[in-house]
Image (cartoon, rainbow, N blue to C red; front, side, top):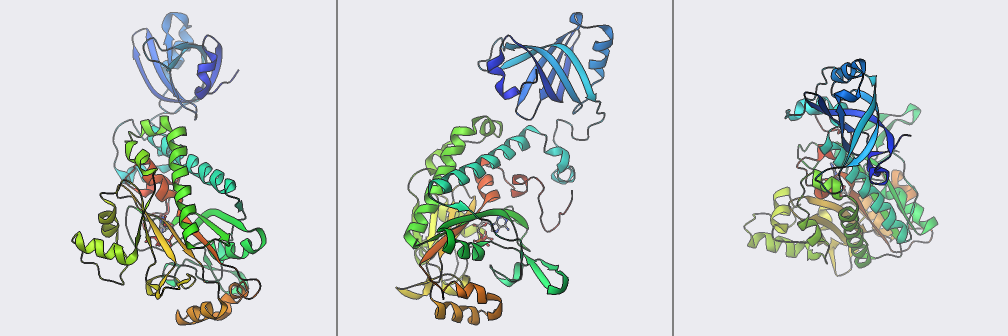
Length: 430
Ligand code: ATP
């Protein structure tokens, strides 16, 4: 009977079948040690020559790294290690014999690995990252449903910009002219909350980012949450609740993965405490104290974000930014009309911005004047303005970048390892 490696603790003493791939092999005379993986984990399988026919032993000696195999054997406890199991091989079948697997179990350069991403995914490290990514997705879905959000999703083909016109990918769209790949589903979620109250979308978004940083992809996954009757302060509480839920979920459910990645878990544990809150003005003041030459009214760069959080055990909110450097849909701050009710959430350990959020402008005239002031075509936003004509309510939302969160939790240096097939300025293949 086929069993999965993750369940072997329940099958000690039983004879089972594992279907998977050969990860590594070493032999010492009459004993062969095969390291097998089946997608759920890794196990050492032991074969003793005297228990095999000549034919089967020869077959086993031939098997190369990443050959697909079916192995029958008895599950035993590791003689020395707690909670580690082995398979004593009784029978062995090669499903497909792989020879000269290009990724040997040694160091390769990043370009080589990225060119072979379709194979690189099978490494232990990439396996662990993919699983943490899945855990974060699950945690996000769980938390939002607990908070009364439902998933409605948003289109990818859009007729206009949401996050500025400089990072749009145009696509020819039949007789309709040019469509753009979505930068964020937010505007559509704002429509959907007027039906369901609280909703989110979770899918790929696209930014023609010219920046070649370790935090930017041109295609990344974003979860945009939107809620009716939620104002700025409650919006921040939801974001903090979500991030702390994700951290707890991963620490609880991803121990094997974090150990595989040699992730120091202490900073993640410590980050699960009340977050710090700075206004934009306070943040600039603090940055000046720390030696930054950033000017009032400028966006924070990567270095500024790092500087601001370097001594912080918890993520830092920067709220109430200048209107002039933020998108048209953000609601003005009633206490200072040059500021908007928004926030960026900066993670610890130099991981940078993970969330951007804001209360949305709900007044028809003010929104219209912002759209006009930005030089956007009002006709494109007619439907969006309708939401302020028919039962407008205070509402807020935020977008979390999945790969940014994966990068922080796993501690990997470059965001390109946080998605199955990364898309960056210089990479479209495989
Ligand atoms: P940044 O200033 O870091 O470029 P942004 O201000 O453009 O980010 P938002 O438009 O607020 O980001 O997007 C919401 C979230 O999406 C960000 O907080 C981040 O987690 C993620 N994100 C934004 N751009 C990218 C990108 N190019 N690659 C990966 N994730 C991104």
